[in-house]
Length: 263
Image 1 (cartoon, rainbow, N blue to C red):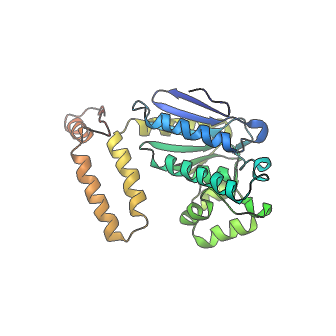
Image 2: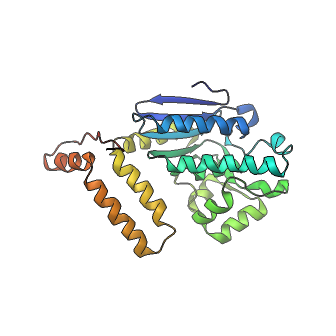
Image 3: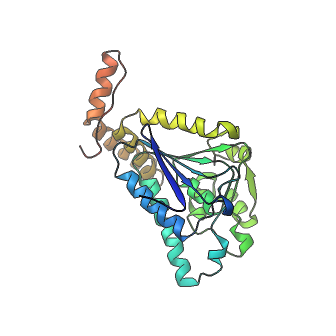
């Protein structure tokens, strides 16, 4: 498909979605969200894609938030639809069976931080800043910020960040557990790409099982979470990837994982 507000590239089994509105600091509007939905659907249907990077165009912003000129025109009905579409996109990204890395190359504010938090983890440039400043507009986060941020940093810090609208530097965000890794801006895409390639070489079944097991077990008690892990472990052992992985180890060679998720 062709897009107007995003770019989608695929190379060496790695897909990259670039939100391409640099003049608006890659702000999210209805068109961006619709095109992101379509792109994620397209990637989900492509078995040759093994990992996804999401980033923003230019060197100033990953996504600086929602498009305020569009927000200002929303009424309660259209606002609910806009927020719902954003939430659906975040859940869709989380549900992808492949690894998704947010490559935060500048400001990740409001909807930008919410988008990054829907990814499996975040790599950030050393000049990046993150935050949920919606309170300064008289509103609250609308794409999951009150929920995902609190689950990562805890209720107290989430409340402080959202109620004050404070921004954190990349280094501060790393210390708080929001960002996994901070690297010089000039090395960001290369570093994220290397990690994506490492994961892309793993078995598709075990990558998906890992994501699902962590996601499904986090909000349960330990015993239930471990039961989820037991069942996922057993299913992995029945996969073509497990047979290849164990055989390769015993034969002292590198595995070539070719298992399908629907096998």
